[in-house]
Length: 297
Image (tube, rainbow, N blue to C red; front, side, top):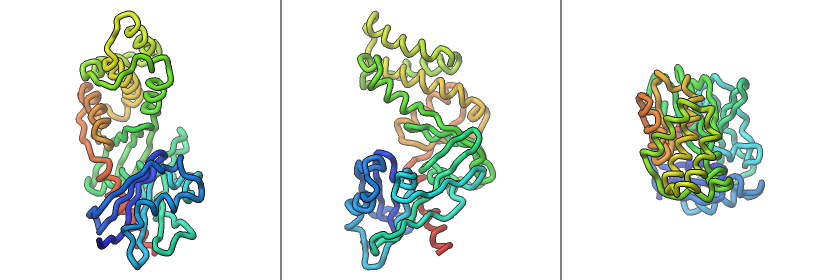
């Protein structure tokens, strides 16, 4: 296998790597050794568990994005301040690596007021814009911490982060609602709940306890409860982000299932939504970062 370089997406909980030849994927591997599960000296061994079979005689560039560049990561890659291009500077070199690799980490973005940060999403945004020339609008990146990003003239102008995904996991797994939330899904229940809190976000806390009461008093199906919990939280998020998405050109970059949920909620409000595959955007963004590295070498 003639690997030219290695792309890496290293998040808090997972590590994904791809053997690359130009823009083409030759092979891929992943593990659960995300940043939170690796100590300071364990990053290179965790990576080599996945990539050792791809290495050649000549050293290969490893281009990584995500939480691997955090203060607790492999090397701290300082944030770039918005407004700026998604990847305004070349990735930071990891010192002292095995001679078979040259490892680089893409820096994240920061916003001073209101204070906000991102790591990893900037690479997806760069990858999206690489195939959408002169694109202006708003990009939503749903996940544990969903990002809403205003893009204009090739730059990230501003962004806001919402802990909607983490709140869902906490409420479904650790609150009183854990006794009522199941694993199924009900599209109609989600749509109704999202519309309800989008129009009345101040009712969110009461709506949440109502889910437990509906189970106790009416025996509500746990799949309905799960969909309603998601709908209430995403509806509140959409109410808060209305200035971002209302009347704007809008793109969603994320995992297919979660992107579909956000798309349906937004389309219900009359928004026109374009979706993009998160992995494809990540790889396109890492390719751009690799090109920056080569230009400054």
